[in-house]
Image (cartoon, rainbow, N blue to C red; front, side, top):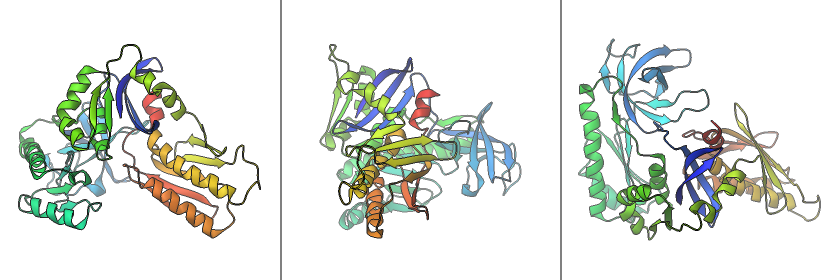
Length: 392
């Protein structure tokens, strides 16, 4: 993973890029000086209840509103409530930003306050003790035994997959840190004024590194001394734990961006056409309602060899899963694969696509194939797509 500053569209951006074998897999571009509110916790004021869409519009600051789905509100932390038992206009409550603003849509907030650490997650509304299902039975039992005596009834605790290689002392140290922060937020909100920020989420690159660490990063490189010190303080021990290294790049003759060909890779990530090694290609077109991806045989000649179209489709399935991550495409995605002759080939393609989608840290699911043979994929909306990060 690399973290560096880069000029894009004549504007300075802080670019966080995840590479696997020199291939760009994920990238985030944050304009220098901009501050995302994703993950931050505020005391907001309800300005309007829209019953027709089942939502409330909550003001996080004067003139800055967010969307709150009412169906997901369970036990909100209320600072001011005009009518006991129901939400109304002018009520004040604690909310957390869970989705960035997209195009003309407001950010989405939730009353389920959550704090995410490197190995643990504290939640307020789901108060169970959960252990990652990706861990083995023995590891799960050991972790459950470690935390079952310490967890209290007023919050939920999730132990992440990244806890597997940690010592008991490391886990308990993180538990105490998150517990103290969570207790402060949920215990002091009644004494804070409307529009107060109870918790400011870390910078985008800090969150990106934290999430990527569970993938087993070998190297985190930055050419910014201030960022290096921040990452060292936050993750130095964790990087070493995973057998990786944190590096400050100081070569003045060749920039970090040029070393990894970052500008060219970013340019390719914004192109409509993506070539495949087989000679086929993808056409990726975002629309207002969904993203459409067309798989084409391209330079391949029809009938050259048996199973050629399946080969192209399987290659396309892997590349599509990568492009969803790379461009941060979310919502509904419809893919028009090349038509295949047998049900066995279609089932093999579906298995392959599901397998590649499962590697995405953002939930991405193959829903099904329609009667017309179109693949329907959904991917959770969390952050703006790459093209919006750069062009808006």
